[in-house]
Length: 371
Image (cartoon, rainbow, N blue to C red; front, side):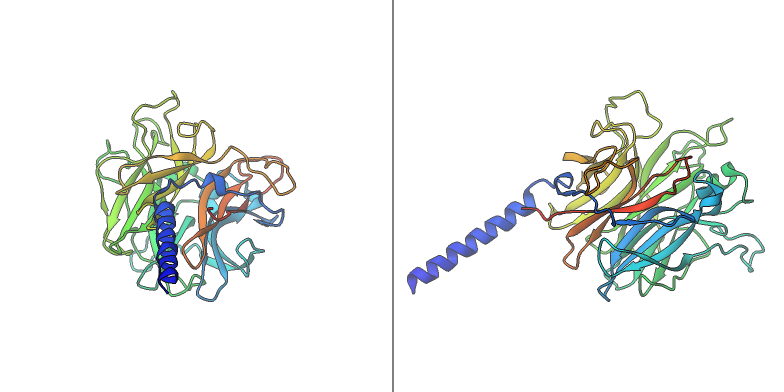
């Protein structure tokens, strides 16, 4: 009996040690990325597909909110003129995903004002989470214009949120954005705000990272691209912007300062150090040395960020299961988590900005479990 009790205590002690070790060791997401099966892609020859916000639903299915626009209008500036957020579903994490409907279509004029809605013509950059209150929140960029003038559309970019009881929708939208531009023209976010990345804070509030551009006199497209943060007690807001910028290196190692990081996906992990993490595109190779690759960042408070101890998640290209390399880099990264909150796949958009007839698509790279 005593020997059995000692064995049980020893086994329990070893399990606690293992759990503590798993919780405190640095997260190395790059070591978990596996080659993409040739079928692990969501594409449509008639549409450019971009972004990609995956989530597992209570129905056991896998749901994907993504951006799309007609292939015939071209990749750019087609995305800024014609994008809409659509919805697809799959039985397995890596698909195949099948189109179901358009989740956030153009909605034109607000009948109460006689003017176009702030997201009247375009929806883009979906970022999806489930809140502890049980509802699903779809953060996104919306804008409007004349369907032809790229700077006008792009400079009308604002950030909003839609809410639903299921990732399948229907989605309830709001008449106003949740994050708007700053009125101070000298602010880094005075021209446009876009690319929302939201995480649920430990207290149930929302931590939102967003992309922004500053007004520069004489430059219709403004200045450098930077990132900031805004906080809210609940997903619908109101959101309060925090001072300073994020993903900004103290000592840049490159003279290319126009944009350091892009397309962050942000989450809070209790299992991996009780901190925030972000996967973002390493635009000029500042954080990983791989220009256009994906970098892992970490933060204790969501405001002060640094490159993780193992920052490289992916290089400028990824590997298919047959050993071949991708044509282009992965952008708009997003993680798919299982029912236990473990990341099981890295989703991303690829093959954009091509002029040889290819259409962009979403790729799904499996992640193995940590040892």
